[in-house]
Image (tube, rainbow, N blue to C red; front, side):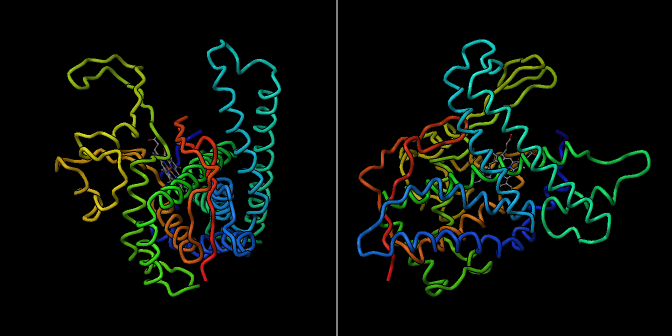
Length: 371
Ligand code: HEM
């Protein structure tokens, strides 16, 4: 897949994320309304919030990527979710050489999923291209529209621009990169707020102060949520959704006084860096959002540049970080406005780092509807 950073960066810059606010609000409203029905009785009701968060962030990405075709796009994230489960199961057997090429039930299903995702995406792209060429539709404000519009504007007789395969790759990447990560941020935030009810109360107080009960959060209000932002940063530090990234040396180079040849693979372990006591202090493993009270740069004890990389850094920094933070603030604010929550007796705390940081046994919480 080719890189498409210019266009994607344009798509996810703050002003673009701001325009996504109605979509965030619509998806969050669907979620809280569903929970309101479940928690309608007097007693608290148990919900595993993780699958619901995946639905929420998948819906948001579908709308952001495909605008009016988002119903068709939803199929993609459902299939990708199934694919991730199958990959996690296959990881147990990866030590068997060539395991992924064996015609096991799981491997055959994974191949079917790849084909099915491509078929759905090709259909959406072809429909949109046809409409655009016939002048029947404007590109709209979604990722696919922007990619197609930019492609049509820039391709020349000698250069046909990006191919359908590239477009499919971009759409798949956005789903994968944007859905799982943000759903984990929201899930861990709810879990942690159950473990620290004092912070849940403080965050709710702030939200109710900024948005009167029932008012849909707006951009100005969301940017004023200081406690919620501190909580989200601390969750990103302690429960980093993407636990590490890999980098390969493209030429011989010196790192930390050691000479490495080209082609060496390195792992950058974000989760370990985020728990380093030399940087964050003796309480590095504790949930203390107040460390972010004066911003990220002042959150450590050393005063040096901080290794705080929930969204990566450098050239490949996450293009969706503003988008994700705004979406997470909208989600948490709307939930805090309507519910109080605590851990269910059936919840087991088991952060499970398999590339992403999963709650291994789910996120069963007891929700109580606020008067
Ligand atoms: C809490 C939520 C998120 C976290 C923790 C997160 C984290 C990251 C990290 C660490 C990277 C860098 C990977 C690397 O260096 O190899 C990355 C890349 C990326 N993210 Fe995110 N992300 C989040 C949400 C999103 C969202 C909502 C979108 C889309 C709307 C998105 C789109 C991308 C894309 C397209 C890349 C690849 C950038 C490139 O390599 O050019 N992410 N993300």
